[in-house]
Length: 510
Image (cartoon, rainbow, N blue to C red; front, side):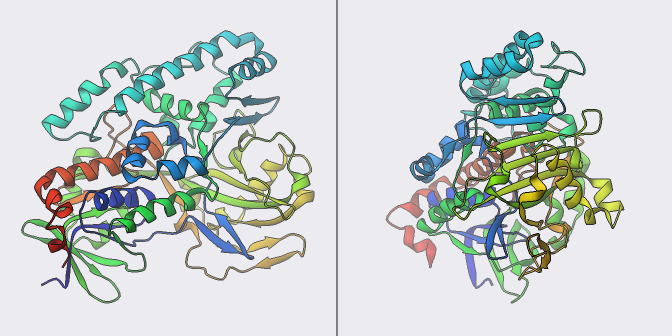
């Protein structure tokens, strides 16, 4: 017998899982969220709170985000805090610096200044991306489950996406540009950081959505990912949802009718649930399954995700005088156009606003190839210096103004450059290579190449809610997965949801 029982038990506190939990709480389900190998969006070092990764809410204009934010009633507070990112981004590469402004006239001047010989192809490309974005918006405005599994879900998705067939796998939107033209790098650089899917295979709908999301300008939220997480948590708690972040599980309980609950690692407590939702990467849950065979059968059908890259973050605190005037919030740098777009050769730099103490924070992100990270034990020991050297080639005199350098991923202490001393972190459990976000390749994709693993697992009442469901749409795909899980559970017990919200709703909470 379980001491406690919930309608939905969500394992993992990442943002997509929290959004799914908040939606279900809002709809009257009794929900518990447990922690699972999750880290907060920020960490503390030298008395400062630093982000674990850059955060630009590229899904700000998505119909899925609007639908979810409206239901959760967080749209108004989000709009009050969020700011449009303009210019959308800058790209710096040898011999070229390009700024993509949201103002059409300013953008035209920038294209004419930097690439007058291909002005028309670039303008036609951006115009086509804008048109395709509208078609994608119309498709995603429908109430869909991605990827579809049942007959009715497949029919709904086929109808909603029929106008997107022109963006097939073989379509090269940059075909009008010369093969080695630098604008190809300018288009691809931001796309490589837009989602957690193999960046070497971005094309079709995925490429259009990623580039279009950047060019329309994302949303900057003071406090970044932590602020958005706080909004969602506030909604979860307001509707009776519970959060126990420190309770990790060591087993998913499987009965005759499918998933029936979980066992808490520290206490051995068994918590029952009608539905168990896994909110992290599939690989992190295999070890807590009593039997892996159902998932092996799933991977035979869908292909098992394979790590291609790791996302590495470095925070650089610099004197305000060291940040050039006119630097955009999001800067992408390409060191050598002839080399692979990974490691120190391609950086994404998030430039934070002034903090009031004369310092500015640069959060630098790089994609590290899996082979380098996993096969070379000393590889991470030099990444910081490589990234700093690369960044210094595009930001003049950067080295003279650096105050502090740190990464939560390389097991090295922070470096206070003024005092020339190392600063050991107070808590080491949230640091090291295992904290890097993994970027996966998927042997088999579906739904226009943006969807991968299904929401429903082979084990009844055990669902997935992570960025491996619709990885090709980035944060928008994560929101789509949260909506799909909430829809599947809500439709499985429509009358139950009514009674929970009605006169007898309190009976289910005893």
